[in-house]
Image (cartoon, rainbow, N blue to C red; front, side, top):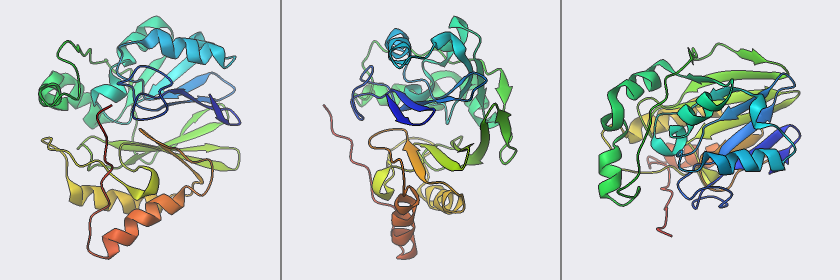
Length: 249
């Protein structure tokens, strides 16, 4: 689904617009002019459906050259191994995310999520093996894109967001660090930290972007900074960002 020139939403689960498999996060695809660049991969339960969405947008799945992962949680990285194996895509993430992959399911609290009913009992996760590690703050040039990784821990200790510059437009791929209306997900996982989330809002607010592309729910094509400002207003009032309430559907 095209959302801006050279930018597409190619996966979104039941907590988004139900474009792909229910467990998938929002996954965004950029046409760099030198290959396709994918941000996050969904849970991996139906990669063929993501393939079909990409082809339906007039693009080729085989042209994906890079996959950037915001963090290791299964709904964001579960499809990475399959997508990497299916073509020539290089899997790229932060060093802390690579460390989490090496820990297996314990690193992403998957057992706890299964027990809570977030994932079905039969869900199986395959951790990817990254092809490259991206250094925060160092721009990564791919065709017409400039990708800069931003450390935004809080939702998880390894979380990174990505600032993507495309011509004169800045896109903030925020993963699960920031959602529409300045909200965050509160969860009883071993590495969730609301104080770190608050600090990450300041990191995000310092960036120049107009489009906010979060990991679940609604995205924006303009005025994206209003949403981080909404979070900052609560922080400045000595309150944490408002919670994103995900309903069981």
